[in-house]
Amino acid sequence: MSTGESFYITTPIFYVNDVPHIGHAYTEVAADVLARWHRARGDDTWFLTGTDEHGQKILRTATANDTTPQAWADKLVSESWLPLLNAINISNDDFIRTTDERHETSVRIFLQRLFDAGHIYTGEYKGYYCVGCEEYKQLSDLVDGTGPYEGQLVCAIHSKPVELLEEKNYFFRMSDFADRLLALYEEQPDFIQPESARNEVISFVKRGLDDLSISRSSFDWGVKIPWDDSHIVYVWFEALMNYATAVGYGVDDELFARRWPATHIVGKDILRFHAVIWPAMLLALDEKPPARVFGHGWLLVGGEKMSKSKLTGIAPQAITDTFGVDAFRYYFLRAIAFGQDGSFSWEDLSARYQAELANGFGNLASRVIAMVSRYRDGAIPAAGELTAADERVRTVAREVTATADAAIDRLAIHESIAAIWQLVDELNGYITSQEPWALAKDPANSGRLDTVLATAVHGLGTLAVLLAPVIPDAAGTLWAALGGSGAVSEQRIGSADEWSGSGAVTPLERPLFPRIEVTA
Image (cartoon, rainbow, N blue to C red):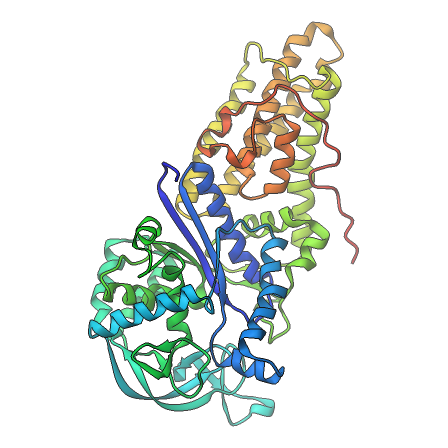
């Protein structure tokens, strides 16, 4: 176990019936960068992701495909969701499935404790239900249908008719927790991020909370209510528990105490589930609420949120096959302010790839390593007396390390990367102004050339350490070429500018980010 602080980070568990698109990948990569960064700090880090596999939609789809819901879920996990993690280089420590026995066991314990504490009661429920969302809808969530659905109420998200359901259900007394939730938001101003999300949730809770229907009896694909096996727990209520069940809730108290509470990274469309319902469930059992809930924005394509049903979903492989995995990871976290909506376009991706990765960073690495190989036979020279320009590079390296690290604490990933890129720009300007190719022509300038090359190499090594959480493959390749000691992922990020190595470079076999000709 690390001596650092505990840092437990989660993505939502994605609904297995959907096909992964770059919106899902965006969430995964953001959480992955945070997890890698905290590991590089020396924190006791745990990164959870997974899949949500219960509910009526899975049951209906499995039946339509002439198979069982478990077999259908197994197929989708193995063919779509686990391959996504490999495709974008996700370093998760755990993968929870809601069909795991460990999850179902802990869910039953959680439910029974809520029931025993008097937070659950029986009642009649009548309401509009969207199977696509697996969620009861308010009238404000519905719109009038058009075309084949004219005259019907349809879900604003899926544009398909909702069903009017009337059932005897179990309810969670969520209305009891409005004041405690508002107190939580007040006492921990950064509990919900960004600020716009916090304001939205506070406004919602101040209007008053209804009790929550938490069971279904019209179908049986789910976790059975422990005191009444004629009911299964509502899929969303059960799914939220995964963050606790994955770290031993009710089963392994030591593990749960070590890991909990978690930082949740979610899309803003499921913010209320995580910032209202989930903390209320925990408060009901006198458990700590999550550490933070961050609702990031949507990826927009043609001005609309990405959606499989609206044919605006883009598979991550459509990008990674051309630009590579590191470029995918870099682009979405650099180009979009984390927490705000962002529009994806192939033109912007291509332009940033060429300007920032190929020309800015990749070309810098190739030039410096090539010059050390050419002028010093690969041996990294020792720096002599430092000029103001040399000192400036080292100062910027220290400053951006601190600035980038502080931005991660705020979950401002885009600001962290922007800070690191100041060192890229500083080094490019340094090489241009110091002209090592000109210094190499005159033996009298040998000492000065040594200092310039040493300064440039040292700055590159700092970049390798700082960028390893964002572009792990390229950072690892650069680190090896610089002769860095150990694996780059094992370096302490807080002392990125104090790295050491073998004292020799190895020429890069190929550019870190090869130029790509993109044809229309």
